[in-house]
Length: 271
Image (cartoon, rainbow, N blue to C red; front, side, top):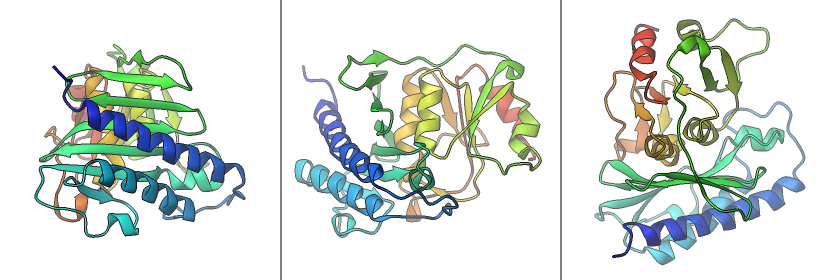
């Protein structure tokens, strides 16, 4: 019997590879922008998204599309099918523009309001982390064989690694850091990379405390963590759902190895 979503995974990996190769070529010749704003979007974001969406829409013409950039292939996407591709062509565009390597290509697939498949491509590291509902999370580097991912078993926040966005140099600790008091921080720009770090056991938790973000910022990465044995919720402990008006998320998100989850939610109350 065919594995559920085998075709979708195959084509999402193929689309991610094509987009990742394109991004890598453009990145090689890109002139760094040292003070790139968080809102930056380049021709590479648009080009990568077109490559991804054209591929996926050709292979799955009835599936809907939700994507970050306004590009031709994102317009007039089908509606009514229960499946929707959720795409961020360069998550961490600031890391791309600054040329620090901290960005990823994110392709998620939702069924109804839940994510069932996720692919996170890190072009600079030549690494892809991917997961399908009920089938585990795997990572592949270069042309190597896929390796199963597992979250950590760290049970004490005082020993935990928290991955988060970059803090301002010389500024006070973020409210999340002050509340959780982790052993160490791993800071970077891409939420896809941060969620992959938790899934691969290279960090213990990630807290997204942005007041406003979107489905494409987290969709592909969320399932990596849950399929690796971790847990992902909103700040109030409720599940993350997708497909709301404008694809907007407004209630923060917590991703952990599962063991730490209840303690983290408790510490975050009131921040």
